[in-house]
Image (cartoon, rainbow, N blue to C red; front, side):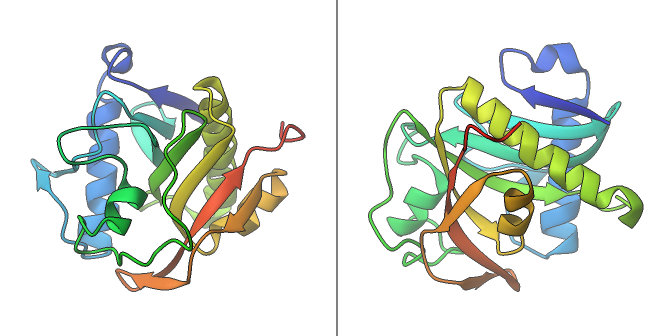
Length: 195
């Protein structure tokens, strides 16, 4: 199992990994969950897949096992900033505007974590290890990018995984169903005890 953080600056060094990650997102969110998202050629993408974002992948060679996208809360691309904030601003039809208890933050040390997935076909015997690897590498990558906090609209099962790694996750909004899955916004504080 390998872990890679992709960016526009390094994706050329990783062959088909970036496009395979977008294909895995398509299988997860469009085919598996029936979400209506932008896509082409079997790849799911949106307005946040820009040079400002990073993509954390757990993979075996070119086969993507899991992933998550990190976007700075200071990002700007046209009218868009980052997913949680844009949902709060009413720019995203599929996500309720009341997803946060307070105004969405904009700060260099806070990054948005979204599009978290474990790919179809990841068997139960390695699923837990894949999930823990994804969470751990997400935190390490975010720290390297200068983040001390993440904000994300995440499935409600994610905090349990975080606790096992020493990652503190505080609810930042109400429970809500998105695509039939229970989600909530969380602030993820990347504790120094996490290894």
